[in-house]
Length: 88
Image 1 (cartoon, rainbow, N blue to C red):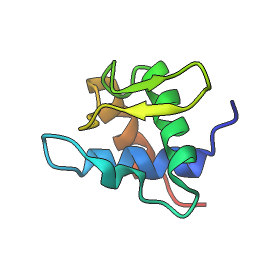
Image 2: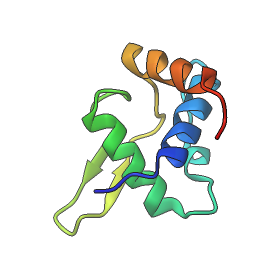
Image 3: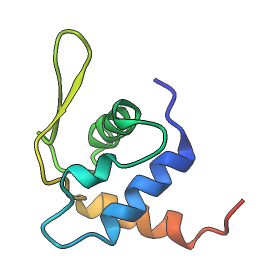
Image 4: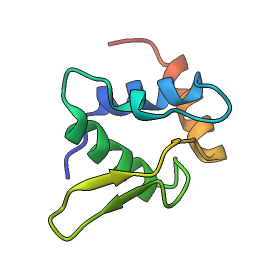
């Protein structure tokens, strides 16, 4: 799956600045649509950047979220690196 790097950066940054308890359904708010954001979250989970078990995929390929969504320590580190990069 091809992940939009700008969307990935946006999601990671929002999670970095979220309440310590994580983000709820508002994490899906984006003009690209909930399914695209959920797919990005699934990719981040596969890479170990968000906590395991928060994004699941059914047989039809649809993603379901177990809220709240929280970053792992690796996710925090990655989000901070992306945030400090100059914008393109």
